[in-house]
Image 1 (spheres, one colour):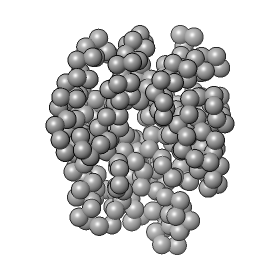
Image 2 (tube, rainbow, N blue to C red):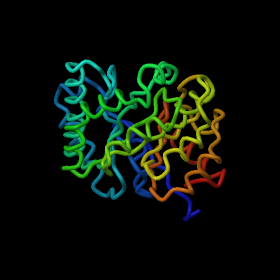
Image 3 (cartoon, rainbow, N blue to C red):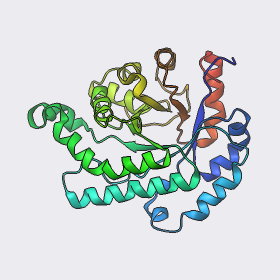
Image 4 (tube, rainbow, N blue to C red):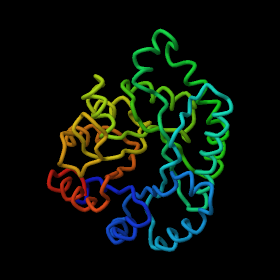
Length: 272
């Protein structure tokens, strides 16, 4: 058991209070998810940071946040929209610095429509990648300055290589790849994407972060592990081929299911 990977959790402040002992017992990877709200970003978020920090003095694990994502793409062709997206991501990184977080999750720009049409209108996603560089130039510099990394999570991505190529195009350890198991399983079931473990292998050591959730291949369920049809043994077998030690984060719709999901992985002999 002691050689098995340790899984962490994505939690909001109430969930962190509920599961604090579980997080602290093994210094599990922790992803704070409070700071995706525009209302909080545009209000006074510092008291929320202070309250989270007050809970974590004994914590020595890897701390990250989910960055802002609602309502925008990092590959917007509209320069006015790109300016807003850049500002939102810089706000997220300001929170990372205040919180002491070393990783921020951002969302992939690649869509189902793009998977079908990019070969005709944007071969190799060249324009999409260039637009991402426009959006992310300042956030990448800021992330480097504060010792934080940006990891790009699959949302609709059908081709795992698209996101890997995007991350690699920055040619910096500050930008890596995130994998959401339920999103990948949805894409496999609904849009013809490869199975989830293929996304792990495609990313290789650019994979720095994994959202673990179960799903049915039809929708983005975020179920407790064991309730859906995601092949976790295949995923964890693929993970053993990497040396990048990605953060393994349970991201569940019901945060009360975190202990149940950990037990499921323990019973499968996959993680602790």
